Amino acid sequence: MKNSYNIAVIPGDGTGPEVVAEGIKVLKTVAPMAGVTFNFTHFPLGGDHYRASGELLNPETVEKLSQADAIFLGAIGHPDVPPGILEKGILLTLRFTLDQYINLRPVKLYEGVNTPLKNKGPEDIDFVVVRENTEGLYAGAGGVLKKGTPDEVAVQESINTRKGVERCIRFAFEYCKKRNRKKKLTLCGKTNVLTYAFDLWDRVFWEVAKEYPDIEADYAHVDAICMWMVKNPEWFDVIVTDNMFGDIITDLGAMIQGGMGIAAGGNIHPQGVSMFEPIGGSAPKYTGQGIINPLAAIGAAHLMCETLGLSEAGQWIENALMKVLREDIKDVGAGKMGHSTSEVGDLVCEAVRSQKKS
Ligand code: IPM
Ligand code: MN
Image (cartoon, rainbow, N blue to C red):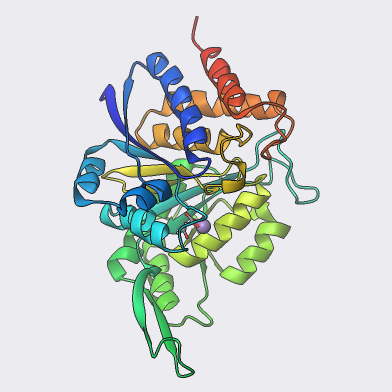
């Protein structure tokens, strides 16, 4: 096993740098306990950099990022840059060029965290969404005609390739098997309306399912999934879906697990460079105040360790995160924790250290 890891850090915009700093603090704390070193290299990408230099992401930077063992991302999004520019120019470009074809988003309600769902607790909310991350409506296919005229035509097409769909579904089955919980994989689609795209998903899903007799294969339409996620979240173990539906249902997932303050995700290329991020965005209104919750970023660090195969380190981080949520902070919301951003990072580090074998 490797014992030195090069981590590319993109603190990004808004509160990104504040939360990433706490994630790094935790990674530096866990590293000696796990017998590894993390070397962090910062890349100043994001809205401020774009406004100052006109540059989004140059090929040399992409090349350097592709050499890293993993990428740790804060947030991309700036109130003074029109929507789409940074998202497409940085975040989506990285996902696509590094072929991070899985967006892995655990939805787990930790003890001590409030969910808006009545009568549901940590035993009910614990599933993972496997979102396809390089195709679908995000591929950017389509175009516009006669823009700005009364005859304007806008077409945005969903691209679904046999290869892209199959590798995503295979990943989801493997993940479900390794996770070893309810052993149930639900395909989230819309076969009753999107009869081309989800017909492909559906056929591949049931075909691959035959190779996994121990896993219960299940299907639900995306609208129904939204309903069940609120009404019966305990039904789910792993959900696999396309890019757009995955984007939407994981925001719902983030809410039922307690909010953006603790939701983390990984953009994964199983054989390549993966990128981990808190999914809450840049939260401009909280920037620089030291009140944003760093636990989502710390959760992203946990996912990073797990994906790098550092499962013990990952477990220490998750245990520490759970301890802090249970015992130390009042609420996961920005400004409501009863501690500053860096104090919460310190509490997690302390809880990591306390697990050291004596
Ligand atoms: C996410 C975000 C991105 C997405 C945006 C910022 C492009 O919402 O990671 O879920 O839609 O994928
Ligand atoms: Mn989203």
